[in-house]
Image (cartoon, rainbow, N blue to C red; front, side):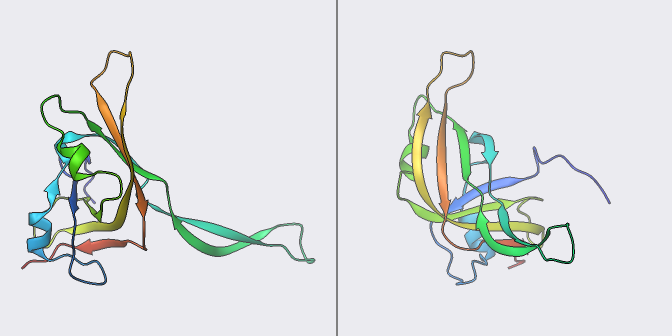
Length: 156
C-alpha cells in the first residue's frame, strides 16, 4: 500500500449541476467543474458522523451502543482572498447550491476516491485579522443530502 500526501494530489472542485440523481458525475461534469484547489487554505468537515444510540440493559454495567442517525459534519472551505477579483465571493455567494467534489486521489479518469457533497452555501465572509498572514475568507456549506462517497471517476 503506497502512502501519499494529499497536498498536490487531492483536488477540490465545485459544480452547480450533476444530472444523475445519485450524484454520480460524468467525466464531462468533473472536468467542467471549477477547480478551487489552489485557492484553498483550509478544509473543515466534509465527513459523515453517526449519532450512536446507547442501549443499556439490566444484565450488565457496560452500556453498549448501536448505530443511529447519520449527519454531516459542519463543513467549510477557507480560501485565500484575491485583491483583484471577487470570483469566490460571487461564485459561492450565500444561497448558492451545487456540489463540492473532493477527488481524494486526483481527477484522472478511472481514479477511485471521489466524494460528492450536495451543498448550499450558508455563508461567505472574510476573516479580518491583524495577524501577519494572507487575507482569507471562509465559505460555510450546509450539506443538503447524503453524499456519494468513494466513487470512481468515470472513464468516459
